Amino acid sequence: MQVPFHSQHTLTLSYTRYGGCHACSLKLLPSGYHNSYNYGCKDCGVNYHIACAISLTRPLKRDSHMHHLYYFGTDFDRFFAMYRDFIDIYAGLFCSHCGEICSGQSFYRCLECFINFHVECVSLPQIIKSKCHIHPLTLKDSYIEDDSEEHYCDTCEERRHPNHHVYYCEECPGIFVAI
Image: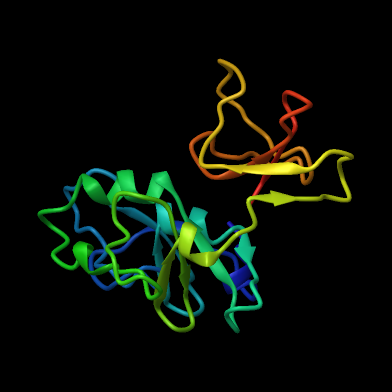
């Protein structure tokens, strides 16, 4: 797996018994736990939970913050909710803008500053104009367009998670742009 935050090396699926995730700073899960595999860099020794590594594939750059922000969506929250008793600092992921807890909803995280922001606190525009579509696109917290298992961004044509935030066209059903 290749992620923008760690572009100098490829991450490989591995099994590590100790240490922490470089993205969320939480402990890696020990053997015997479901989903205890992670992505790691053999050259640098950094490790990422699978859900965190997936979050690192699409950085967001905002003028309000000097570094890229990474989207931690419903996959991240669902993954860590299963281990709430094991991961004692899970509740410590607070929004740096409003001070409220980030667990239970999607949020952005800066991996340089180790701070978090609710999607609403990043102040994403509710309506955008895209050079890839003629109509304005509206921000929606999730959108499932059909019963298929595969959902794609119409701009970059990469797979998108149906429960993550997305910009969509209210006039053209089926036009989606992942954020």
